[in-house]
Length: 301
Image (tube, rainbow, N blue to C red):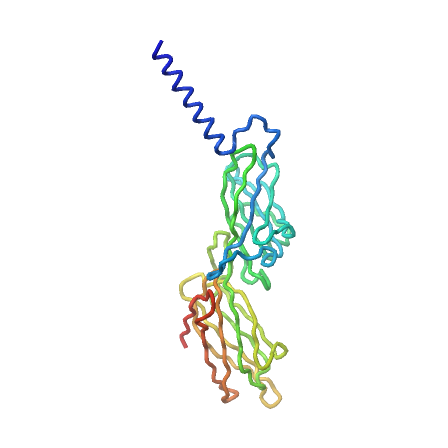
């Protein structure tokens, strides 16, 4: 009799532990009518730039975003939709997915990319989603691959940080002579695509145009964003300028630097035109060491 009582007490203690664990996890409810069943609520945020102490304002950085949720067991796209950026509150934006059955899922969120946020596309697997270099326009594109287990009938919630895909570059052209009418900066060997897990692949060039109409007091200042290299060889910066040669334009090509860009970094390139031969201009390159959050750019001239 005593042995039986001990066994029963052990079973009861085990059941109590299970009940307590479920209660702590928030999945033990006698009355499910008070729950939002099979609802997934996620709060999206953006990663900080180096040197920044505050998270970026979501609505300022993101114009448009979409999500794709894949069922890991069935290998199917279970849900997809648009993130309502208009509901962003400072550094965060909430999104809700209704009627998502219990299971294990992989979600991909893409922001600002032209293809995945504006076209009616339905990928079959997460790896099918890749962001192209320059597709974010004037703003950076953001991605995130996020895995979660939806195992509570009363729903699932979490905070998800989206990753910036590119490097930010501030280009400053100083003391531009009158005979220079325009041109472009070309950054070579930058990655062509970025996957949601921030892996880069491919190889392409990035061109940033500038013209006389952008000059202010013989200087031009503009921002652009670009993917880093997919390999460790880095990129070269080429300066193409159009020079007025007695009424006709002549193009001059000058390689001005070798650099290694990093994702989610702030960089500054300064091209200072000095007085010299119009067809062999003297160009000096500087890196602003006091630039807050700048990754060092190594120039090999």
